[in-house]
Image (tube, one colour):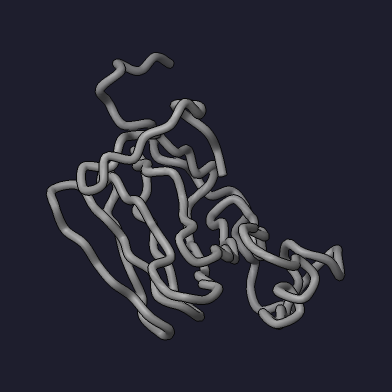
Length: 161
C-alpha cells in the first residue's frame, strides 16, 4: 500500500472487540490502565512541574495528566489525523490557536481542538496547572510556530507523545 503525501492515513481497524459483558481486566496496579486513579496520588508522586504522566493507553485512546508551572506550557504543534481535547483540573490555561483564536480555560472547563489546528498551551495563572489530555494513538505531533506569540524552537519537527 502506498500513500500520496497529501492524503490522510488509512482508517485504523479496531481488532479487540469485547465479546460481551465481562469483568474489567487489568494486568497492572501501576499506570497506565489501572481502574481508578486518584489525581492527588499522581501529583504527589510526580513532584514539581513540568511533567506528564500517561494514565490510560490502548489502541483507541491515550489519556495523559499534564502539569505545568506558572508560565510553562507545551511546544506549538498540530495533529494530522485526530482531534484532541482536554479537561482542565486546576489553574488557568490559555490555548493560542491557528487563525488568531485564543481560549482561556479554568478548572472544570473542556477544550476541544480539531485536527489540523496549531495549538500552543500556556499556564497563565500564578500556580500549578493540571489538565487531562485525550488523544488517539500514536498521537503524532507536528511542530509549528505559534502565530499568536511567535514561539518556535529547534526541537524535533515530528514526535509521538
